[in-house]
Image (cartoon, rainbow, N blue to C red; front, side, top):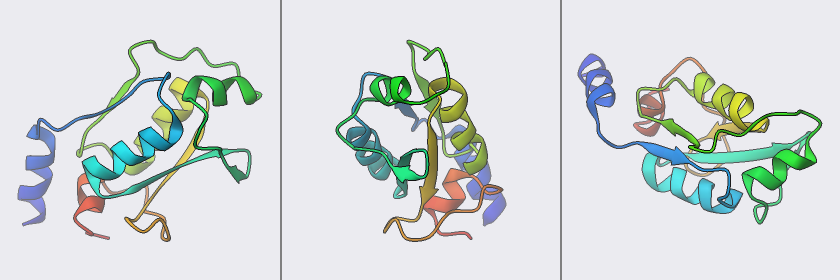
Length: 120
């Protein structure tokens, strides 16, 4: 069943899109709806204020990252670690993907689709 699910993740038309003008709490809520997982934003070692936008949070970090105006797209076939790196590369922010309750980190080696199905 795992192989079939992985193939379905690649062809699933569901796609999570992130735009720099969205508020962090909106992005997190949309991510939870799309994948039944929690997306947590950090500024340094602390959880970032959910009322900030990605662009505003980026201005508060020490990194100089040019945010892609088109945002970024994440699918169920994307590995968790790769998705977290995309946020760092595109927006200069640190994120962690956690379980639905936001208590347990999801392993970086599995896909978001596997994590959404609890396959870890």
